[in-house]
Structure formats: structure tokens, C-alpha cells
Image (cartoon, rainbow, N blue to C red; front, side):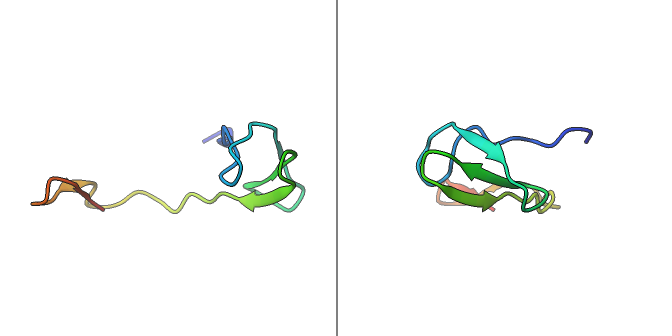
Length: 59
């Protein structure tokens, strides 16, 4: 992956005024609600998503 993925909106207030933070990789700052947060990709699930008996998706 050559470029980092950017969030489209703040997970707290929903505003789109986000800027990369100086706190490190994956850190973002929201100018609207003055919060900082960090995103981290954990990896792919080995088994993937499988439907369960209740009709929903099991993770």
C-alpha cells in the first residue's frame, strides 16, 4: 500500500474537516469538535464473513 487511507468524516461528530495529526501514523484531528483519534488496520479475517442461522452476519 503506497498511500495511507484517509477517513471521510469524524467518528465523533460526523464533520469532514479532518487533518493528519503530528502524533503518529494513522492519527487524525477534527477541527469541528477539537478531538484527536487514531485509526489502525488490524488485518484480514482468515475465515471471512459467514451467514449465521439467524439471518445476520457472523464476524
